[in-house]
Length: 131
Image (cartoon, rainbow, N blue to C red; front, side):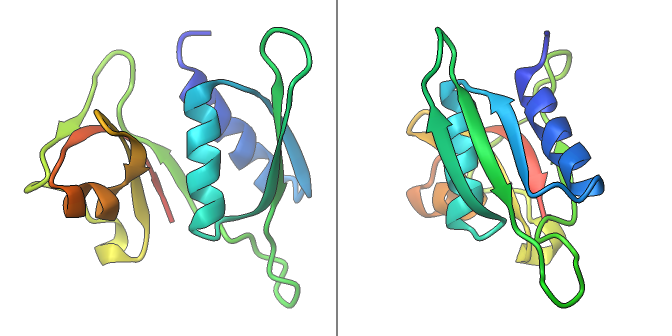
């Protein structure tokens, strides 16, 4: 697999379209950090890291609105790809849906959202947009 982050986002997207409650994804440190951010920002209901074998898995419980049966995640979009990396400075930080969504960045201080990176005045690689 050449792009594990795109695979992670695609598995989440496919589970949302199929209205699954739980999705299992192969784990990595970067995917764990992205999962923590999605949980902190309220896009997923819960998550669990399972250490089985050399790699482990991440179980993600998706969040649905009980009245309308719609998911909390409207769109997951991969920005920086292996063939074309996208970097940004803190002054040119992307605004996702005019601040309603989040951009997840990989910085020198770790994986964080665009707002956290702006507060710390650091830039980095834009991994994905979530809204």
